Length: 193
Length: 193
DNA sequence: TTAATTACGTACCAATCGGTATGTTATAAG
DNA sequence: CTTATAACATACCGATTGGTACGTAATTAA
Image (cartoon, rainbow over all chains, first blue to last red; front, side):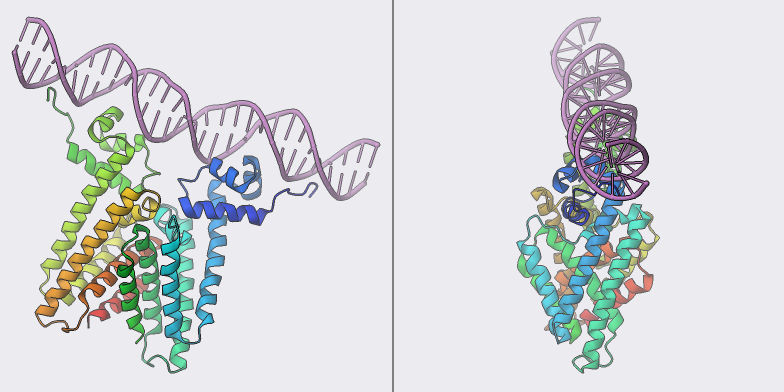
């Protein structure tokens, strides 16, 4: 390396992530990216590759950060029921005060790119699978502690919570009445009792 | 009217709907549309307006057709439990044999356009609300017939089924193991018992 | 201090984007 | 048969798209 980069690669990638997250792949132009990232076009291509590669790097970054956040939120609570209640209630509260409603970058990508690009089909699937494992571990912890019934099907329940997470996140993009979503969360949580 | 249209407006709109459904708004170009619809560019603009207006017309058409399909499927069964079981199992079966996985046009639009365009936020929200009413009526029918417990919260349950519908539809875009989805459907259906 | 290497900024590329002006053709009314 | 009207196809518009060639500036190794 003879001349060091004048920009922070991670920081610029983070800006790209925010932009792709908010607008999606197709609606985000190279001009959008250069102005938001604060670097020139050739710098993007030398540091990350083409637009698709930059998008992939941004998604991988999101996936890592998001997975760690979910893990942290679940572990923060001692009770499994309280963990899921806090998780879903936070999800709803955060999404309702966001504008525009970005939702989840990974879910957005599942809708926009996964059906036409196997790389993103795999990437997004693996993220869901990881979340499912996190949910399952939380449920199994609740079973061991006696909080949840011993015959609880942890795996099936975890998979259902992933479905609920996706459904809630996407649904809130149309900004339905808050009570609609709250009722759904309450009903979903009854699966734990 | 002095010279009749040489193309069938509804039929061409249907082709546009298929294309937007499969590729989304941004990824579908006017050239894609003209070749698929079999008409020239100015014909699109004179018959439907600009690209956004054509998209809106296609979405409205989808919404009507889809709502009627859902209504038909729910009414086809006599038992509420069987109605929802058939509904969700059909959803999964159809989606797993589709390639590419188009999902639901309305849900796709909720993700791509609703956060940035209030018109589509409203349009997609109203469609979800209508589905929720259909679900609720089916549940209430089950309560009246004695099939479901009298203290069943029909509204909350219907809203939860909408969340599940969205979650399942989007999740399947990443083509998870079929058992994953089947387990989730089975768990969701336990909410009826 | 020189040479090699790489980042940077500018300016550019062909291709495609959404959208339209225009001339021609077909129809119905008079 | 003429005339008004609107649909048709072609050909075009400026703007923007993703991507790159190239000359300059900066850094390290020799």
